[in-house]
Length: 116
Length: 117
Figure 1 (cartoon, each protein chain N blue to C red):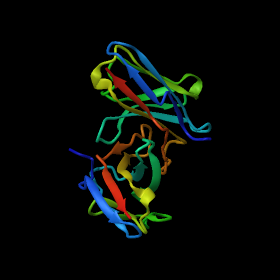
Figure 2: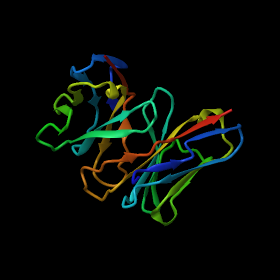
Figure 3: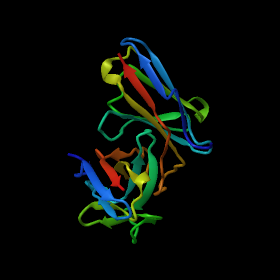
């Protein structure tokens, strides 16, 4: 079974508007972390935002915020005031547990295109 | 530049040749990860080091793949007898992690793109 599901292969957004990228996850571990990364065409994965399973509040980092709905097992990324430079591939990832072996499991990604 | 670096950035090789990639993590990071990313997919975990110890290997890591991290600093990933199916982006990431640390963020390098002809 897929542990991370990103159902939107591609999204378009008008410059300066907000956009939401969907992510659902599947785990039975009570301790987990959710991450969003941005991958421009250059290939480097850029860390954007983190949400821990025990965090009481939704994470925010500048223009990025995470809409964390634990009961629904969703962790959607919201980008406010989109910029042309936001055009990239976006990946949701999960780390299960807090012991050793903290590998990330990634979704298939969503391509975001910002239109001027 | 204090980020994760990888060399080479691009590698073209012929089927059957051996290739080696290098990753230099962020200096204070004790954990180092290798991932493989094929076109249109998210990265997949290959292996992970805590300091110099290789603690986990994915079943994706066949016996043609070997990774080392001597002295707990840089790491190398070697692929022997390359096959066309090995063509992918190989990503390295590092983190500062310890048992029960919840927010362990992995920072990625620019990757090495491998093309096997």
